[in-house]
Image (cartoon, rainbow, N blue to C red; front, side, top):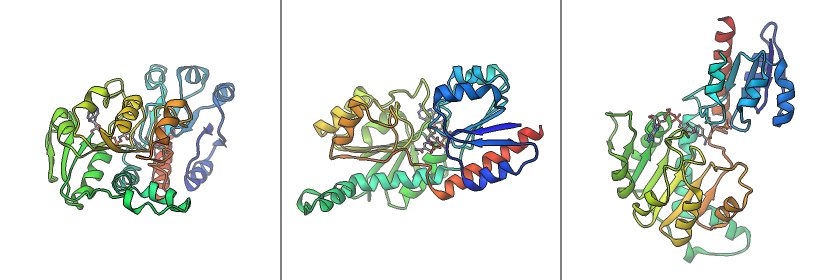
Length: 303
Ligand SMILES: NC(=O)C1=CN([C@@H]2O[C@H](COP(=O)(O)OP(=O)(O)OC[C@H]3O[C@@H](n4cnc5c(N)ncnc54)[C@H](O)[C@@H]3O)[C@@H](O)[C@H]2O)C=CC1
Ligand SMILES: O=C(O)C(=O)COP(=O)(O)O
């Protein structure tokens, strides 16, 4: 069976996959045109978020049986086209939640306490202490949009900071945590911090836009470690510039890498703290994700 890994997969997981009987394994990143050429040979394709598994890539996979996503989000895979062709799509939800939750807390504190700007200023020989007064998280209100695996891990940690935690999720009707489940409007208008943990779908595209931002508290802090495209980054830029939004912590962008003009303008703002989609990039999460994916692939192969 021909297996191709197109994005970095944990070493131990790769070795386990390679050790299976009758597996011919390749591991290398190909850009779209090269990958399309290779697809007719591949039975199992393994990706993370960097490879966009579009309809034409799937169509080229005449022997393709399984697409393995070493991670959670499936927005980079045309799942409808795959399933219509009888190709299984397998992911590893939950296996990277703690890493994303921890990064989210990091971004919240970095935005509140100017950690990135302080670092840059010091490295440039500037002592900007007077400009860098920030905010406590203590007793302030955080709104979590999407109360699934990651949203709940975030809540658990923020409760330890004594924050008032609100959450909105259309499928969650009760919780045993000290979290108030509210509707989206209530969350938007009452939160000092808003953190997003929903998948990117047609329904969540531009969920945070000019209109929703106008209903937020002045000086709100926004964190997006879910997906670019859930926040309208043009509206976000304007609101960060005007001061309506105090700061934003971004791990994801509608365009990745964010090299286009809008993203570069956004990143140039002093009140933006950003990381290059590293929410799941810890040794622990990658090992968990990789091993879980391999376990699931083995089950599928065994039928
Ligand atoms: N930055 C990174 O590296 C990572 C980002 N992610 C992103 O985080 C997302 C969430 O991951 P999990 O918590 O594991 O998924 P999950 O499926 O456990 O939770 C997502 C929740 O969002 C809710 N939801 C869906 N539409 C909604 C809406 N319109 N409004 C409010 N809630 C809505 C769902 O009901 C569900 O409870 C992933 O889909 C992925 O895009 C996930 C892992 C790593
Ligand atoms: O699991 C997810 O949804 C992620 O966004 C992680 O992406 P990555 O596997 O690190 O490219």
